[in-house]
Length: 608
Image (spheres, rainbow, N blue to C red):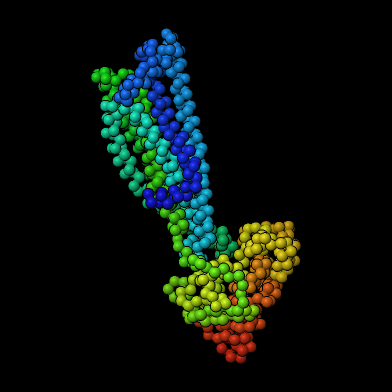
């Protein structure tokens, strides 16, 4: 129930639709009971039992409400039909039709207004989830599979709509329908209604036992759905490698195993869920059967109940079955929805360790230096950086080199606050980056990574990602600096060409030059280049390196280099090994020292 309360918070902005739904549901429940009660005067006409009254009846007290209603209907039929029984029947039938019409009209209006609440809450849950996903640190998603996250924002949220938000339709309508119907049943026969109440708790106990394991079974289904969505996502991302290594059958088998588990879990869940309706219906018919026996005795032997009243009573008793079944189904839906809500709320309630300070400073310029002061950091158990000290002066280019796993990319992640340092601090112009807002910190930086991360959009929109109001002249200038203008103009629609999912319509060099153009257009004072040329062929590397050199002019740059030939003109080269600095200086100084850097250069020269 706690999950239900938390999810219900998303319905609060749409509460006016909820109130309208409640209002029309009350009317629906009232007319639902009255439409069956109106059967009694029609049956009296058919059986010739209606009394001909010359005077309208007088209401005395609640205990005689049934007699008053019967006499009033008899009086109206008498006054309007005279001695013609068919006229009386037409009036009684017309009354039933009007009541049933109003009942269904109010039902439609109730559902009409609840639709806005359900879909509005669904929209807001998804928007909040997406905002949270974007806000959470990168470390959160290194532990989660993408497919599982996609499953939570799609199918799990939809399950919440089908379960929790569906209850909002039933929470007023069905209980009130039962309440009003029982009130009318009491008016017809107190003895018979008390007899009914003996069997309702027994039926409820049976139904509740069926629903106990639904949450556990539903949780398995939703987790497995996340599993096979992850397999699909990984397959699409690595299709080229899968085909190259002839691994189609292996991945197909993995997917097949996942869908088989999903098949088993779904069957178990749905079979348990489907048991609810026939069980509920059988129990309801069982109660009706017992009523026929007990009520029949009252009509035929005791003669304490007239036939028309008894038939009306049976109609009312059957009128309880539909809402009772709906309530039992809703209780199953809640148990099933609990699993989905738990998975959705796990994301929504996740704490972001990389937070803005309460009175964060919005830094807008960079004037002196960036300093790493005894910084230590670990992703899990082992430190990847230990007591790391580095100073990067304004206008200088510092290159980080070293073997894979030496901590170079970690430095780039920490300066951008994608991760939080465990010990020590990083300062810009003497100010700890933890005291700045994340937005202002990242506004000072441009990032070009080894993997050119582009989006399924036009060339223009990809370049303008960091500056939404960029002019045409600014976009063209950035593309020219990045050596991208020439190839862009040769695309089918130039700057308005869609580059496909991940920019897959472009070559590696073209994608990287677009990434550089994007960083140039942002025009930040600090550039972070994370192995920006390592994945390129020689010709593309030359074009990209030329673009990088143009971009780094008059800027402060932190360059993580794989190819050492690209950073020989850096103001300082820092050689890293196992999270520590083992050597630093200019290219000439380090070559003369004949230590780690020279070995790395010779290895690459030998490789080339």
